[in-house]
Each structure stands twice: as structure tokens, then as C-alpha cells.
Length: 345
Image (cartoon, rainbow, N blue to C red; front, side, top):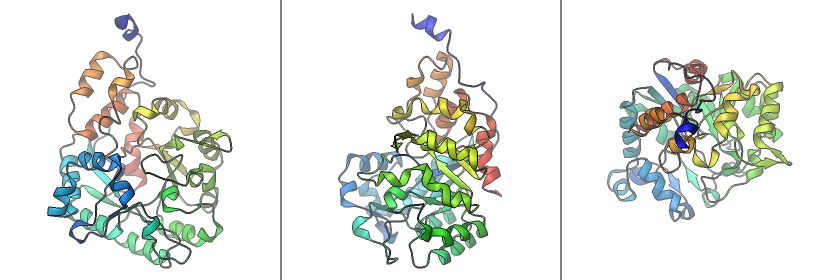
């Protein structure tokens, strides 16, 4: 029975060759504040099972961070990336905290804080890492921070509104959006529900809330094709697809879409006409490691040969790329981050 089922195994689209020197445009980093990094993880998250799992994915431990400082996380990340056969660079993402209307960081409401200065220091130590800035639009100096980030080589600005606690549809953000357009900085923002933190204001992940920056001309990359959640009784992905029809400056990425809890998502990303020509390759590292991702959930989608080959790949980026390629991800999706982010490396 199993052999006969495998005889009908087909990828979602034809398998294509990979481009050289792929750029991963969605890669996370974090720290606990060791070595004066300025990073912060809330007590709630540090006591959550996710915290130790994330550290293991980075190849470190809380004890090692306390001994050597948070920069070791960047060193491990860059070292692992350097061993990849397919991915040459990764955009490492800062993550701003919760900022109130007074423009001041509210540490009490911030679950994770990864400062731009820390990410920039990491990037300057490693030529295969690129700077992804994160700036809360309520900061009193937000526009100056945008200009500074651009001057330091930032290739995009990253938001996670449901964790940073603000509404992307707030008209008060218009000057921030106009500055993004002026600086030609794309905005990578989470869409859909957020499941990597202990709490989230899910309504701020509604793709429809991105109408304002899109109308103002911001290049928006809506992460994960809005792959989780419902808003106003509509699937998040459907709401994102509707925006795609109206705005050519709206893109998305395929990061996290092979996670076990998102099994149908790669099929939808690759076959839905609304997303044609709009997708970029991203990994969502470190969330591409077992047990969150397993090629075996595609048991009768991929051939035994492909499954065996992927299972033998040790490097997480190469395993991620090969799994997505074997499922039928076009070469253009893997090439697009380098083209869109103007990476001159």
C-alpha cells in the first residue's frame, strides 16, 4: 500500500534548479543582555519551554551566554551559515520592544527586545550577515532612527505589531511610512496570528491593517503569507490575497511554511495565483529545526529518494532550501531576496 501511494507522489510544482548565493531574508537572533548587548527576554518567556528550545537551535545555552556574552549567538549563526552550500547571506532581524505613546520603551510590556545596535555589531563581525533593523513607530526619534539604520546598511525594517503593541493602520504612522518610501526601505511585518511568544495582540496581525502603508507606496513584505488565524471571520491568507490584487508593492515570504503546524501552507503559497511573482525565500531561522519542521510530514508528497536525501542534510539552511525546492518552490522565489533587497555582496 505504501509503495503504491509513493508511486503517485508529486511535488506541488516541477522541481527547478537553484540559483547561486541565495539570500535568506528572514532570520532571527536574540540574547539575554549578557556582555552588555542590551538584549532582553521577559521573565515569562525565560520560564517558558520555548526559551531553552530557541537557545538549543542557536547552538548555545543560557550558561554559555552568561560566560561569553550574547555575541556568541551571532558567531554561531554566522558559522553555521558559512557551512551552507546554497545560502550565502542572511538578513538578521532586530526586534524593537513595546513603546508607549510617550515614545519611551516599556520594558514591563516587552517580551523580547533585540536592539539595532546589537544586531549591527553582530553584522559587522560577519560578512555573510545583513542588517535588518527594527524601529517602533511611536519612538520620539523614529524618523531619525530610520535614517540612521539606512546609513548603517539596513536592507529592511522588521515589525511584529502584535508583540510590539501597535496598530499598523494608525494614521499617526503616516510620517514613518513616508520616511520608509523616501529611504527606499522595505517593511517586513508579521501577518497572521503569532505563536512564538507567550502572549500577543492578535488583531494587529490582520493583513488588512496594511492598507495604509501600501496606499502610501511602502514596499511591504507580509511575512508567512498570513498563514494562521482569522480576522472578521475570514482567513488571514485570504485577506492578504485580496490586498495582493490591489497593490503591486505588496510581497510575502515563505518563511515558516514547512512547520508541522502549517502543513497545507506551502501548497497554497505555490499554487495560489494571487501569490505568483510576489514570494521571497526566507527561513525563519531558528524555527526551521526539528521538531518544528520535518520532511516526513510530506511522506506521500515527496519520493522516498527525496525524503532520504533531505533527512541526511545536517545544515539547517540547506535542509530548508532542499525541502522547499523538492516541494516545487520555483528558482525565482529563491533568487528574489537578492534582487529586491539590493544586496551587493
